[in-house]
Length: 108
Image 1: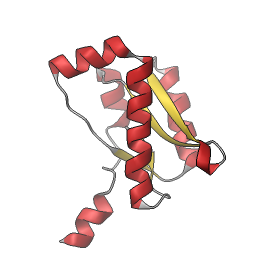
Image 2: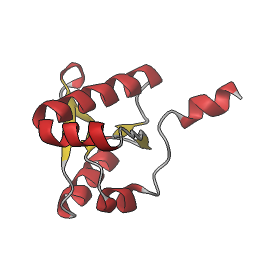
Image 3: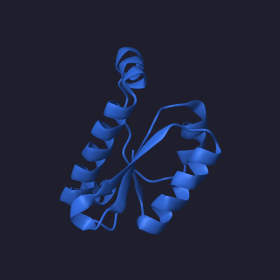
């Protein structure tokens, strides 16, 4: 899951869930496989809509399966991407920071 960090933390969480449910609706078979074999979920952060769009193109160019979420209440801005787990996606996204990491640091 890739979500914009320029959104308030509550919206980051909400947009991630929207993308996840949208992915589940669009890719039922992949979701069933994921649920049965791993159930791992990783939330990653990207700076803004421009960077999120860049990652979308890069992942699609590499053949990754994904579902974007465009938030109607934000003029249909791209706010999150749900990405199917795969070795290619894992390698491609490995440099991104965990989402909401700043909240974890603030609570320490």
